[in-house]
Amino acid sequence: MVCRAHAGGIVTGVALVAVGFLVACGGAASPSSPAPAPSATPVPVPTPTPDPNVPPVGSGCGKPYPPPITRLKVKVLYKGAEFWTVDSTPLVGPDQTYCLSVGFTDGRSAAAPCDHHEAGPFTVKAFKGGTYRVCTEAGACAEVFADRNL
Image (cartoon, rainbow, N blue to C red; front, side):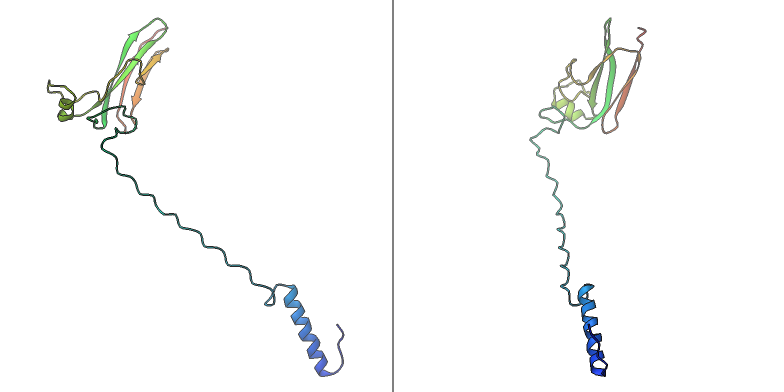
């Protein structure tokens, strides 16, 4: 840029320098940056109402569906040479109405909620002696000591 000695030329030169500075530095003459896109707000998924004709998840039971497990019974079922079988039986109740509905007519108010098989998920093989403890997710627990001196 060439500056001239008369007053009007100096003002013109300064104005051109100022416009050149704004263009080079991203000032008002540059295009504006796009506004950030709004993010979508997630919509909560409603919790479905449990179907009364479907057994509770993990219960393995049919109708009438049992109330929650309130306690467990644990015992050494078999004492073999290599290991002992420790068995636990979940119990529901007190609920005399449920017990009567599944066929217990002796007045009991606690019962195993479903068919229980000795080789099922409620048994463990105790290869060493010690305390064997079983608990439900809801916090019902029971234990037995297996006195194996092998």
